[in-house]
Amino acid sequence: MRLFLAARLAADQLRELGQAQALLRRAAEKISLTKAENLHLTLHFLGETATADTERLLSGLREFELPPAGSLTSRLDGYGFFRRRDGDLIYADLAVSAELVQLQKDLGGVLAELGFEPDRRRWKAHVSLARRTQLALSWPEVHQKLPVQAETYALSDLVLFKSEFTGNGMLYTPLFVF
Image (cartoon, rainbow, N blue to C red):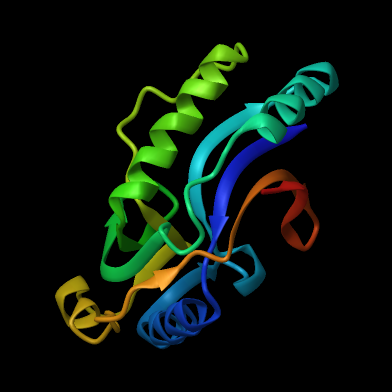
């Protein structure tokens, strides 16, 4: 099964991201928006994982100690995009607490100890809002209209998700909630 570790966002932050997605939809010729229930901050992508490895992972995660409640925070800080052949991937940049940055590193250490190959790319705190996007307006025109937040929000919770491709898009099923 395909797995990833992620943080779920606060309800107020999700509302802001929904507003950004609505603006993107209006400004796009073509777009595939991330479903509201799938918006999250990925901490580690594990990819295809055997059942035996998943059991070992769950055992290790149960032993992992989280930082104090409320110290894992994020703020909607801006937006960006990655060029793709089938259209741009548009994301929201998050400014995150030092505790969240440390948590991401610590989880990477636990994953490595459990025999999982860590992602070699530098971690970027972001939320994917849309894929296969072709904007009708220029990026600067769209970007200046997108909402940013002055307020910082505590993350809702941390989750190990199973990710499945379905006929109705991606389905993320929680396997373990911290």
